[in-house]
Image 1 (cartoon, helix red, strand yellow):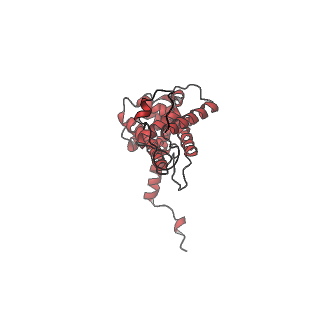
Image 2 (cartoon, helix red, strand yellow):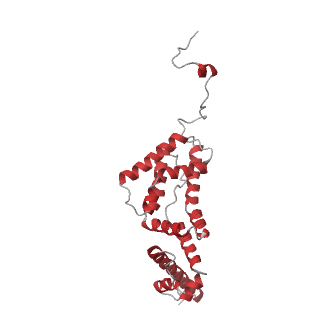
Length: 242
């Protein structure tokens, strides 16, 4: 009787590929645990191999050296960490609601213990390993800023904002809503209270909308246009009417 192909045993090549992938994941997981617990410099490849339950030769079969292992770990964690900040779903934008959601998703990456540990690890290695810093910036801050910039352009198209430089405005928004919170967490200081966390987000949104928001839909308002006679009229001088 012919059995269904779904129950057939995997080919040796497929099984070997699956084993290779499992070992790759094991090595990355062990490197993550040891790097974050004891630091990059003090963790040896031997220790990573023992922790992963593989040989040292297997580690080098997957990664050229410890630097390459760290780079692969940073890239993998940055890709998997955090939600997409804004997803275009076709609904009209509610500016405050959507900015608040973006802010919460962004800060959740810092509130997450694994995200914070990765941030500390990168900061400790960045000056000596430029490739690590570049990978972190590309997969982390650059990605976040690009997603926020896309939202800001969509909000401008809907007549809610005036953003001459969306990328700059995105950087400014993320800076406003995070304040000193990441620095506080990175220094292992006391985590902010829920009230402080909310105030940081709400204050940042308020300042951002004050800088870039439109008061209403339609043509942009002209600002700074004052008639010459009005500009020269002393304060308190009554206006003569015909």
